[in-house]
Image (cartoon, rainbow, N blue to C red; front, side, top):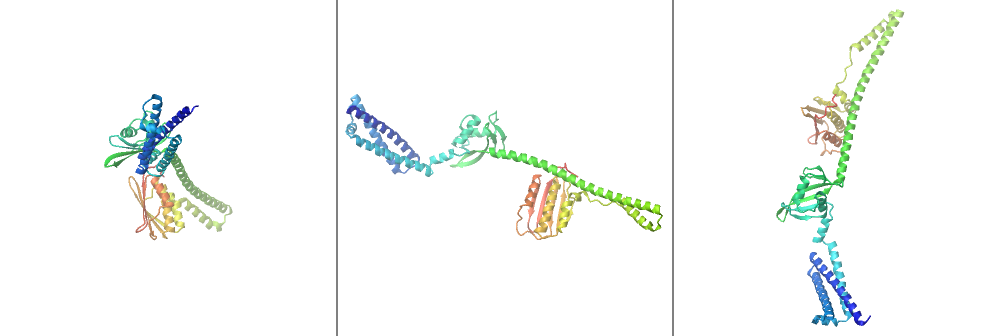
Length: 434
């Protein structure tokens, strides 16, 4: 290879390097302007961009002069006389400065809040976000809302109002499934994921705007379905337990009746044996004992043992527990015997007896029951000392509130001037009435 050919190869390489540096300097200047870099950094980038342009133009003029015979410009003629090592040194300096500029811009992008960093952060949000004017003109839309729009209607977000109208009102037509379309619609896409759409009114630069967000609620929907299934199972178990309780109470009643019958049977059997012995032996001394035995048997047959009322049988365990700890329970009005009020009142009596004995140090619990067409109003008070502060609904009171509100009732607790527990229980389930 001759010296002339080597010069042309070197010149071609320099032209390619100059062209690459020129393109990179253009990108650096544009990025510096986007990141709002100080004038010093932006000016240096612009200066090196100008230098790269001058070098590239000089190389092109030199090539045209040799190949086409055009008269060279003064700049090209002077540049052709520059040694190759000096040209390479200039390119090396430009490349190093370009590398420093790119590193600086990269550091600024990842360590300072800029327009680009905000845009990148919004696009990386897993939640879809769209801000638009009432006319539908989109001001901001991230990648997540664009992907959702593609899945729902086959196009990106071009009009925010149309997207909301489709989510809130339009028929699915096989593109999605509607879970709910109340204030915040929830839609399920064909891939099985569920999204909750929420629209809020905002004010942007003194003008009205709408903010539309889409949050994935797939896990929440699965948990909600599991909770509904668990609640259904718990309701079935509650019904079984109530039925078992009724059977247990009936069994206790029958047990008492059976014991009474056995007692009568034994007394009559003893009286008959005593009469048989008296007739067989003709013993006048045993006449008084025989008469006493028959009088006792006749009393058992004629006098029926007074059975407790139905309400007392229903609340027998709670009243017995109150009696064991020394708390006297008085009632005004008829205690409810229908579910769910029966279960709620039994739990309330147990909890109030415990609080009266343990915390209030009282010995009397008063229950006032008012029945209406829609339900019962029950108030619990005691004669103990009032609570020192606000009553915290933990443990038993918390369970009582969940039980009461679970059947559609309400619960209210007062701590001043004295303790008061007020329950409102509706008449909504009469399947288990006594």
